[in-house]
Image (cartoon, rainbow, N blue to C red):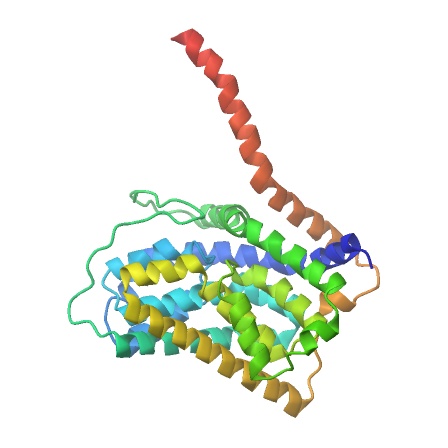
Length: 355
């Protein structure tokens, strides 16, 4: 198949689930207020670490968007462990990436991924609290802007009606969430297309399906700046090229949680010891979960379900329309600012004349 055909098949297969995931992300953003998150993580200890993981897992935040939220959590008094747990769980999984995983990789990955993410987050949080204990209350940190959007000043909230909340959810899911993840989602889709078409199975099979292959995936995933949703098609491409399910899981866990920006924030705000404990927890847990997943596949004889790579039949019209809608939403991220800048330039002569 040509690169364009592979890319379109991938897009058609994943578009409905991505659209559903983005909508759920918008709904969650309206249902779970940030103030409630801060309050739940204020008390130090193991309970707050678990809460950090459980609260962060479904939240609709990308790898960069989680940074200002985590800083606000820390400012609210959360322990280093709870902050670390939140930082791991939030980018590693989410409602959009879970639905996407189900569509692309099948139900096993859709279940294994959030379980592994929660386990990784809790262990990382416990290690941070154990190896970098703090006696004083967390000092307030200066609010910073993320790579996705800048923090806005708090405005007095007004109670919205159910209809207004739904509209806000749609605007958030199909607006801000897509804006936050568009670049990396496109990169992920393109990378999956190239891997599927170009990389021969023998290239990745040389690493085997055990510990060595997972270490290679850690090395590949560590420096990457990729969100959970975008890592899914890349992992599918790697699976199609011959790596084991466990190695693919390792990539999907380490890629979103260990990017350079996140590591820099942890070092600056929590300290070097916390960063070492954080990295140890994420990497060791990811490899352990990968080994367990390989054993489960072997024991139960499960087959890989890489839907986007094996479908050769024509897709229903509704799926193709969903793919077109997703393309429009993604294209709007880059096209809309162009029209905005042109409109601003057009107003400049009018302002000069009025002066």
